[in-house]
Amino acid sequence: MKIKKDDNVLVIAGKDRGKSGKVRQVAAEDRLLVEGVNMVKKHARPRAQARQAGIIEREAPLHVSNVMVLCNKCSKPARLGSRVLADGKKVRFCKSCGEVID
Image (cartoon, rainbow, N blue to C red):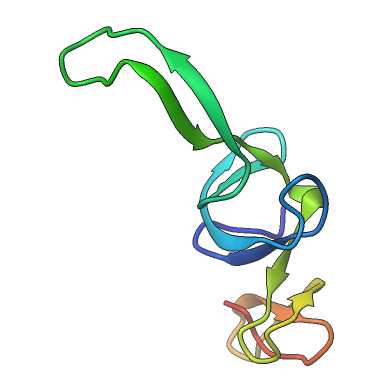
């Protein structure tokens, strides 16, 4: 998967199309959590004193195919490629402007 934690992404499909946010967690099976996107309401019972009971609103995982990374330089959603630099380090880059993402 080409998307990593702390990347800025734009949602390109689904009910939250057009929203952007930071990747909080990369979950299993090509899913990720994005801050403030795909909010769902979960009904929770009180289990411990620290946990809140009632209706809790939280993020649900999105499939990685429904988001695109936002390029820092051109501020557009970008397809990513990978290349090896002269020092042997493998980095991701924006295919439209050529800017290194990592």
